[in-house]
Length: 262
Image (tube, rainbow, N blue to C red; front, side, top):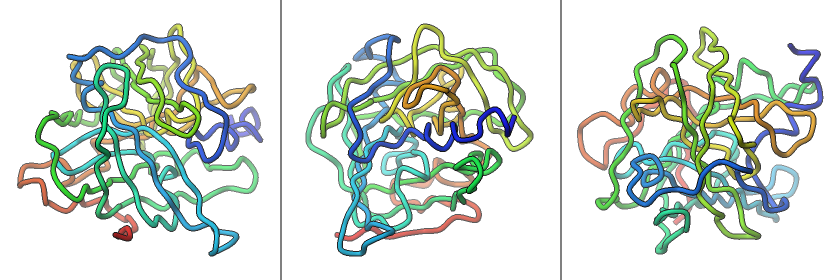
């Protein structure tokens, strides 16, 4: 498999930083009463450039509410040096204000591989938890799925982009193809292609429980593709969505914890 994705997977990570607007192609518009889409958010992160400390990068992704003050997204969406982050919720397919400011981020460190861009085994760690400065009461968090074998069906939600702003929230059905021992799942989108800005978007089981978040697509024509790589949620989070109140600190084993600037 390594030879097949050489030079492809690295270009197909789905975070967007100054790239053309692309959202889920095909799929279905979000419904206003759908539990999945009501918990889905747009995540915007401002981070310090790795090459130049005087420059900042803006990354726009998707994410999902897993507790009143906790949002799960992909680790590569928040970067190494976040200066600030915020999330926006949706009413149906459109973003609604105000934005909710983040207080801190906990994420795994995803090491890059010079040969294929991102080592496949590391994508199983491609999750981050954003703790909001204040809990959100009007939205219901998604419950985590139990780790296990390959689910029978999956569904994804993603916000894409619209110029420099959050884009249209859409969903698509996924057919699970394989799951590794680390929980990394490969699935194929049905009647849709997953694109830039959909990274970190929630993937749920048929029962509506959070299975993981979109990490990358395997494609020969980036930035979109129908083969989706999903980083697992349930078996990686030990306390992020457990009972205990909105100010509970997310515990991500082996993670780097960062506090964003106020």
